[in-house]
Image 1 (cartoon, rainbow, N blue to C red):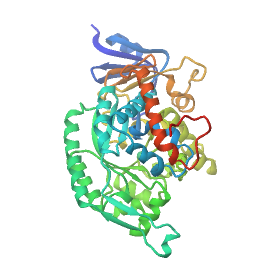
Image 2 (image 1 turned 120 degrees about the vertical axis):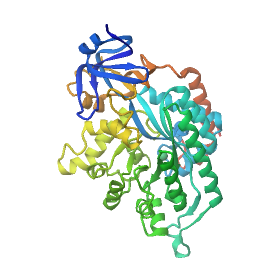
Image 3 (image 1 turned 90 degrees about the horizontal axis):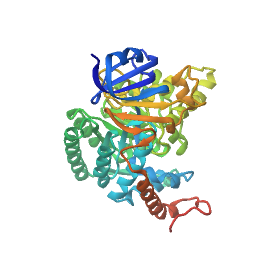
Length: 473
Ligand SMILES: [Zn+2]
């Protein structure tokens, strides 16, 4: 008698397991929220009687993709930040400050809709605004996505004296111990509550905005909290030149060096961006077991350096890919990473293996899971792991024939090729439609929020928007 299971998902199966097996005519068997078997389809069809069959002929089955860095509250800012420099403090942060709880929910739903539709089953969220934490967490729970969700900000105000000002002034900083105490208490409550209520799908983390905004005490206290609750700390670091200049002027050290000096760099620390990172700092990351969240499009979007991903990986640093709100489609992000690091590291040395398509897929699956300390459960298709599975429809001339499915997906696939998405055994995208989000009303809400943000952000831009762009002012 065949065993009853919930789902049998068939196709060319990219497992991303230790041997990087790709099973031609393979299948994944799912019972409840777990994968129970990954094998040849002919074998599993005999062994199991599924409630439902997914995938099939000319389908590629892969692990749910994992986005290592995002800000779900910033999804509607994208048009206003484009090609207007500098944009983080002028555009992104004022946008968050202008958004109420309902706006945060709309933005999160909008981003999660894009992510799920493109086969992203896990997102690492970095919330910067206290009022947005609860609506975003609730939206995560409702929409069915998996999330490592970091909350918190900083307790330090710092000021970088520009080159011209340094004739009379120096860079300065001041810390706010009261704010630190308050925020640590909120983080402790956050870690405790969501560890219990996240249903294993929302894992709480802590966010440290960065070295210019966080005291040494905060870095050490959040490290302790993360250890106590078996969680982690996400921190924007070595992102732009101003940040490096500030750290050098205040401490005589670069940001990663400084966090290492005070003893806060460890295997629970996720370094976001790390674009302007020296070889010396890469060794510090490797020794501490610190992972990096790399959002390649942001290297271009804020015209900072190309992250030294090839050197980092060679040194043993785990690197996961991130969408960072700008492009919520990891197929595109994998492709950008493949091309960017091929150009930066491969072409100068005539080394076609500097960063391969398989490396790009690794950084969006199993290494992304490692970066989020979640690889015991997600990141590959293996029995016992959570059933986070994506089916790509390859019934088209872009994706068939696919002699190397990994390379084919990285080079040619787009998010809308995704047919089905399963998170923890639940089908959340079916035949290309997100089941957990009603996109019609959401689009109306997104336009409303986009217009509202336009009224705030339009006049803040250095470069006016093109004639005909509707920005209510
Ligand atoms: Zn960020």
